[in-house]
Image 1 (tube, rainbow, N blue to C red):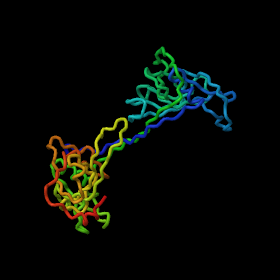
Image 2: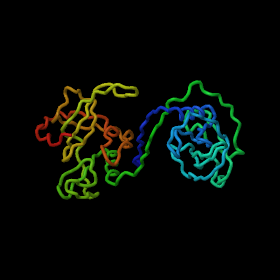
Image 3: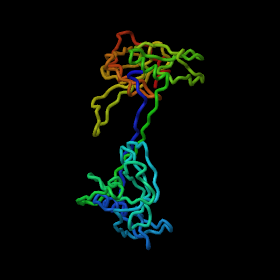
Image 4: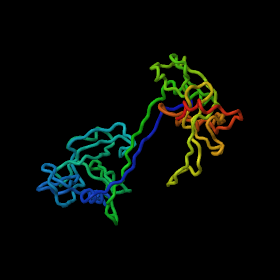
Length: 330
């Protein structure tokens, strides 16, 4: 449907870690245009290790330069790169035995096409113009395509590495959520009436989890865009870098007329905190149709209220008795 997109979100967790006595110099070398390996007896390990991989015995920090050329020992072609990959076009991941090393390095080869990659081919390192002391500072190309580079070493060693672990999630909205979203764009709030209990759920999960009964489009019902406050919390924003909220505001649950379940996570900013109360009758003031947005609506929680409703206002009606509303506190 127009205006309704698939659910798309990214979960990310940034963190930092110290690099240590071996990985630190290795990353510093990449930033400065060199690839380093570590001596382990009569072998050279690349990437370098702090221990002997056969005996687990600690190794002296004895690093030597390897490469920049090497031989592909095995490889796989990446047809559809993700945003986390080193390139936005197809490329190869390869096990590369660098000249002077005795163990292969797994890294990216930018070869242009899969038929340009083969086991035994020669490749050479290329360093990116902007380097931060990360494994992605370098990549490989077929040896004949390597270009000469003039790299100026940095002033300080790399002692901290920064990482951003992320998971991108994309899925279509469930059919009942699509109808709910379209209702919001049309200025209507849709719920579903359980065929088993007769209770109306807003927004619906597509089933009555108390009665274990599926609900279909035939069970869709429209509820009012006004109701009574069943519970609320006053949120005082904690100030930190990037914080957009500056003033206290209300996050409320509202039992809409015709519903048996309150809508939750409703942010109220236009009613004074000291006037807000359980039982208060409120009315949604919708945004103009062209300004309504349900992009934040997902399959599992909430109603994207701030994307479609401009504000909530008191209706001026008498308050509802707060005692029955205790059942709907969230």
